[in-house]
Image (spheres, rainbow over the protein chains, first blue to last red):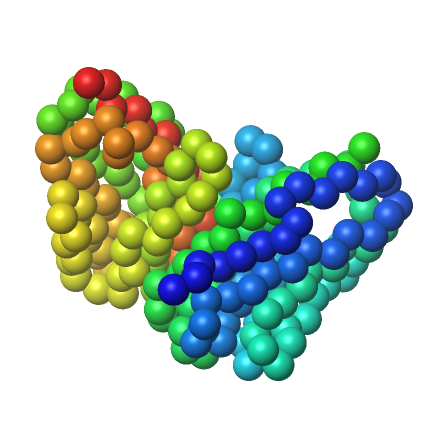
Length: 115
Length: 108
């Protein structure tokens, strides 16, 4: 069984640009979660998608957005990039619609660097 | 203010020792997860708890809902257990909060 895959592995952007990060969940998983892990900080919850709908979002500005496609893959978009957006962005997937009621499976992350 | 607090922040143990990592939270929760993050960044979900106790091999996780506290125990620790262990909760409003992690080093 293929795990959660994220692309690209690394992404370098400059301030003000836009970044798109992609995530393919494990087959059969309908929920996708996005997290940010900035250097020296803990994980922070960004977004939760299930069955194509945004179920909840964390305390991030609206320039962080995303969507989930009919095949349950997802993309995270970050507009008007700022230096503090530099972080490891992790995607996780799980079965079910009840958010964290099932074990989460994590991808290896996309490291976004803002110059 | 952190909704999830972990202790200790750093822990060094000799191989074979019994290890306990603690997690306290301040919100009403519907689920608690223990995660393991290795130096390369990959995260593995170890346990999902809503009550009681779970055991996988040498790992044991317990939760006390009334006291808002969970513990992760590692018996007969091994150098391959060296990692950052993260406690995470989902509150009753479907928000997710993470502890800052406990960095464990097991010395042979």
